[in-house]
Image 1 (tube, rainbow over the protein chains, first blue to last red):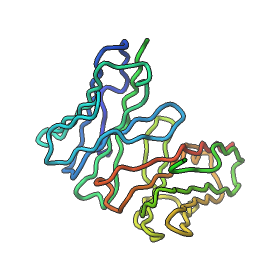
Image 2 (cartoon, rainbow over the protein chains, first blue to last red):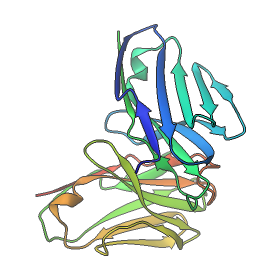
Image 3 (cartoon, rainbow over the protein chains, first blue to last red):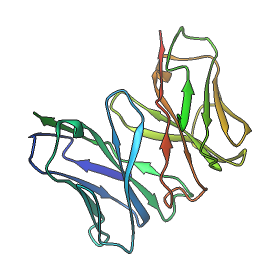
Length: 112
Length: 115
């Protein structure tokens, strides 16, 4: 079974609105990362949050981690059309043997 | 400067053929990976190498053989291609072996189509 599952699978919003994407996972983790993938491109790292952290910010991005619920959320504030992309969470499970396991991704569309 | 590069970007070939994808990183990283992304965008690790040594070998058919001539290069050779091999293959690198501790840098991907 997959370690990370994103919710929703697809999200469509207007420019200027906030976008929230959620990630749930099944086993204990060391760290969790979020990546963005623009259409036809490779993944780009956004932010890493460690298991002992609860919240992290980077520019317009805010990531939270709740290890008791085994979930994380990515908030993009004041979205722009350029934020249109797929967003993936990736977990480094305690028993993973040095590998990242990616979720299925959320496709975000920001309409101008 | 391109950090992680892959060639070719597109590869169209017939069933039964053998093909290779090349990857190079100029970041000075010790660890490199191959991932396969299917049509539903699900990304799954195939292999990882650390300083030319194979670390992760997921349940991948023997037709797939990675080779790392040096720590800056990781190539993927695929024998006897099948329709199910059609996907986008990504190369990635990270500073060190502990996957979750460091961000991974991805190449642009190679879209393989087997007809």
